[in-house]
Length: 113
Length: 111
Image 1 (tube, rainbow over the protein chains, first blue to last red):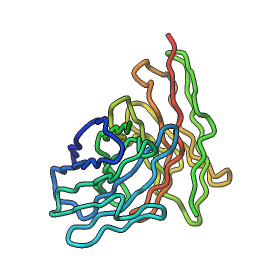
Image 2 (spheres, rainbow over the protein chains, first blue to last red):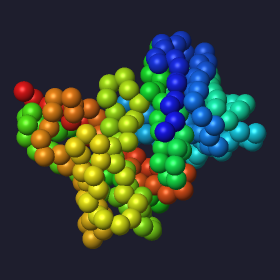
Image 3 (tube, each protein chain N blue to C red):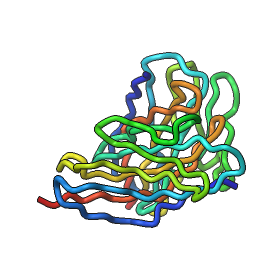
């Protein structure tokens, strides 16, 4: 099973700034997924990132706000741009380790002030 | 569209008592069903999954879940709760490369 290292684990940011979250996987994976977990809410898929192609965004999420990079098969970043307090959430990356079985990073707890 | 309902936001159980966390789903085909646990400051850990076959699924840490198609349910159970089980539990339904999560149930364990 893959092990995901996600950082930073938490951050407090000023509104209007951007934060880049990194996920490193200890094995090569085709797809990586980025989720948002707002306070008191379930996990919501932001986008799916394949190496060598543009990320696919879910309804309600746009590339300008959440640009994603996927430079190789073990690494991805998610940037939360021009942050507002509404972006305060936990952000998690995930990979598929077997058919329809997923492993998650430990999450990034973001607070925007 | 697929959806998951976890009707209990919080549940408090005495240590040593039995536990049942409820999950109802909506899915157009035969679902893949999952239970994950999230401890404070940790990522999600897979407890168990159901794809097909025996409707009673055994997982890690002594948990089990039963798939009941007629009730569209996939409830999680444990016969004797330990203090270390205090965490948030998420039920999820999925197919190929998609997972839809419930809002989670926070389990509190009292001495």
